[in-house]
Length: 448
Length: 185
Image 1 (cartoon, each protein chain N blue to C red):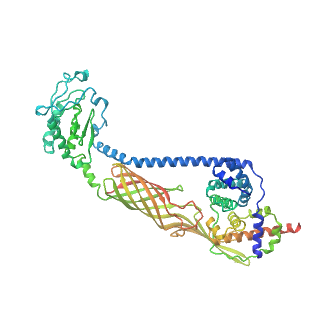
Image 2: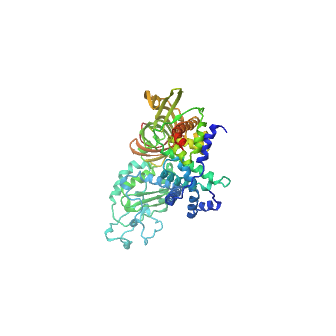
Image 3: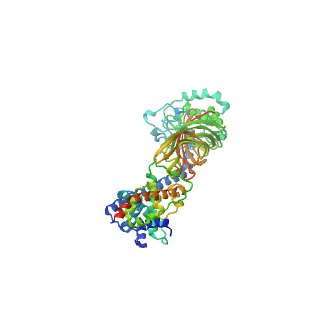
């Protein structure tokens, strides 16, 4: 055993032996509290995890149904606001229990037998007593595109001429006329073959058109010019307006966006982010996107300091040449690649990856010579380009949400979770700054 | 320190009495480790509790073929190093040394060192700069290699060696100052 080993061995043998410490009951109580608190937090964490997992699972399971509802409501949203005031048939508008649906009446000239106070007085409230009315089925028939121009004014006139108050009377349609209407609706709505059932509402009543079951129930007192206008659109296969249709076709083309925003880092700093995005719609809901943006990670921590010390020992003493490099910002060019799912006109979610490429690093440096605590020849300054110790590439998972605010302007919130360590190795001392985890909020403007 | 497997099993079942018993059995051993790495008794007790919690949390990973004493020592030292890294002063200089060759001779100190007790040696080590103190303890007392220390403290092996040598130089200076005291004894 050499003398050098002996020095270390002596210290080891003296210090590694178990020193006698008396048990501290008070410290055990503190430890107990700590253990209890940890287990409590662990329970909460597990509970939260289970709850969120259940919630996500529930959303995934329910998604097809939610999506279906979105489609239906999407149509309703296109009906003029004036007639979308109630989305379901109110109790008053339902067929009273004591009124049965009569068998199809055999009438001439498609005349609709209308229940009046004479035939069914028990179902009419005093305030609903109305003048006898006779209405032909052709009045309710949906005009074809050809008839449209001629009949619009006429229909409006007829409808306005037949203002009356009746209980929710049922329009009884003879078989032939009924079939003719349904066939017309089906034929003319081929473009909208996915749409089977609509609830069209007006100010005071509802109309259900169910093309599958070939049943048209038209509460007579619900007919207003707005309702007729909706039926016309339906029959002509124009469930969306020309403008909306144009927009729809337009939306299939490549879209270009520019954005600016802030990138909030886990460490607590907010840094600018700006760039552009290209989005190509693929289906009604799905689109693929990419782009280029610039952002920086502001480290600004004394932990990201590299100090290189070169010691020179002389007979009369020593000097140390010290170079300190403090990293301030990592500047990245980011290329996101993502899929966008459009939930409806206003909302969309995205998921994808961010590819980070480190193109430069800004640093503060200082150099000096030190000897027995005395510094001399001190120089300092700022420099770009010293990127030693950091990974030149990073990749992050990107998820986000976009919401349309105004015409061509949207707001977006993205979350980025870096998958790689920003640091290349243990060159720097701060272990906590290893991943680029950030939240981004941006204003997006659509250029085309 | 003798810890039965039954006691470990009971701790795994989160039995409070067993946990208390394990704490009592390991207290002296763990606090002596803590006391070497931190400067105050209060801090040592705080570290002990954090380390003990980690021992309990990771108890299911313990393999009986490894002596329990070694296993808890490793957890305790890792805890101390982790906490040190969290609390480390930001402006502390980090030395980067590619390689270091030690040439100094300390054999003349051995007789004095042999006459000092653990408390006195520990008192001198505590006067070292924090990082040097940790590296010296890890290398000399706890037997970690420079490679392991470099990984634990995010430094190069050369830096670790430099810290050990720096510590020894400083200890030598301190011991030389107190040698007259020993000569008088």
